[in-house]
Image 1 (cartoon, one colour):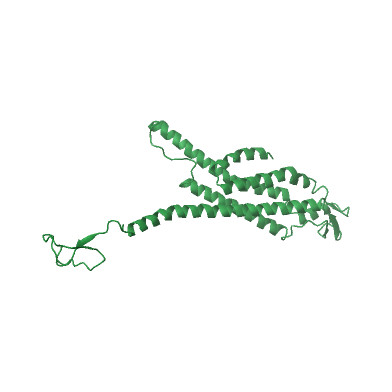
Image 2 (cartoon, helix red, strand yellow; image 1 turned 45 degrees about the horizontal axis):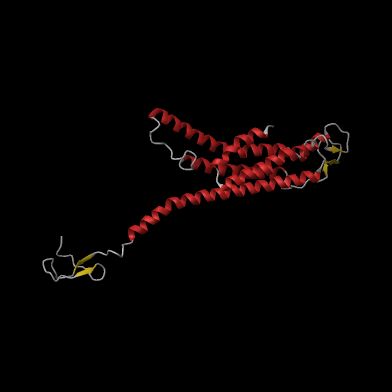
Length: 267
């Protein structure tokens, strides 16, 4: 599998990601894709060939291998990495759609026409929702694969050296030996831990985006309500004192609120 092409496609996502998104991309490529390509595939390369059972019964080793490894670890991780990185491409495609729409708008209305977007890559409107949904999808994919892994292997991430198998067509309970069990156990724990870290990063970024959006919406409204509800002390309203008329030069001005104002004689 050509992982370099996938890395080239996702390299542009850094421009449209937050700081947490860039950390997520670094974790995915350095601690998941790179480790998978360089080390994990080599460790599991001989998994079925070197899965040896102490019997010569034809088909026994294959049946026992399928019993203890219903889905290969490396193939499960490969599918997980593909699905968890694809949502990031939606953000790149959405930005490309905005830029193309802006280009066609200027070709149609002239270079001095008002822009459709202040910044096509700024996370507002539909692009904000695309980015948010991609984060939720990535966290869901990683969580689902961890659950599938837990169900397939009964929550046992250890890799035993010897397993007992009594499946047909084995003539009796036979011992089967797993190659490189310690290496496989280390890589299994490592890949599970990095998946959990990526889930936490995605959830943290969701909280950050939603919290920032709420502050952008509620902040100006609260500021306007406070400004409208507060009267300036430097120029308080005044009214004529009760019983006086404007024609009388001795009329007394009183601050509104310091005394009751009788407006019964005024329309």
